[in-house]
Every structure is written in structure tokens, then in C-alpha cells.
Length: 128
Image (cartoon, rainbow, N blue to C red; front, side, top):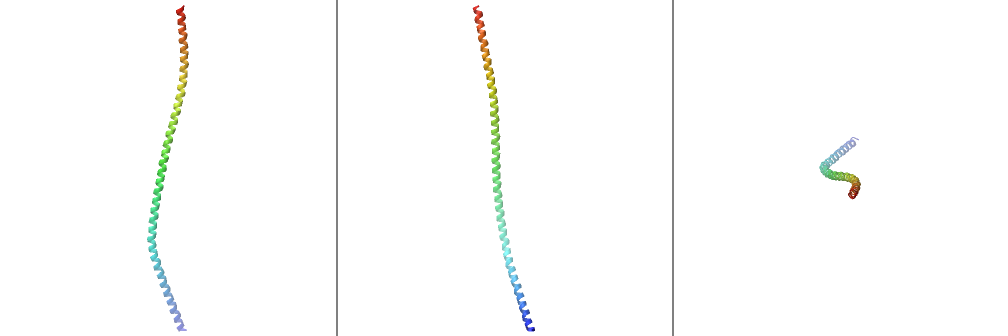
């Protein structure tokens, strides 16, 4: 029994020693992978950061282009409104000039009638 107990204890000790050895081996492998992973993660982060900056610059450029296009459209709209207002003003002036022209034509006709009547009076007075 004592001999068997020693064999079991030695077997248990060997199993524990092998378990600890395997554990340290796995830990060292994981540590090596982890240190390599750290470098890989750093590279991936740098790459992702550059991609994000590029994308941000691209979106900023698109925003600037759209802002410029919107400003151009606003300027064209203001110019068009000004032209429409100018055209409306010109139309109002045209209507006023047409009314004035009609009044002047009527005045001219009345003056021609007065002139003709004055001519007739002068002729009739010369004859008498």
C-alpha cells in the first residue's frame, strides 16, 4: 500500500508538472501571438485612421462643392428675380408711356381741331 501510494503521488506530481509545463507553453504562445497582434492591431488602426481621414476629406470636398453650387444657384436666382423686377418696372413704365401717348394723341387731335377752327375763322374774317 505504501508503495502504491508513492506511485500515485509520483504520478500526480508528474501530471501536475506536465500540466504546469503545458500551461506555461500555452501562455508563452499566447503572449507571442498577443505581441504580434498588438503590432497588427496598430497597423490596422493606422490604416483605418487613414481611411477615415480620406473619407472625411472626400465628404468635406463634396460638402464644399454642394455649398458652392448652392451659392451659385442663389446668386442666379437673385439675378433672375432682379431681372423680373426690372421687367415688371419696364412694363409699368411702358403702360404709363402708352397712357401718356394716348393723352398726347387726344390733345394733339383737339389742338388740330382748334387750329382748323381758327383757320376757318381767319378765312371767314378775310372774306368778310
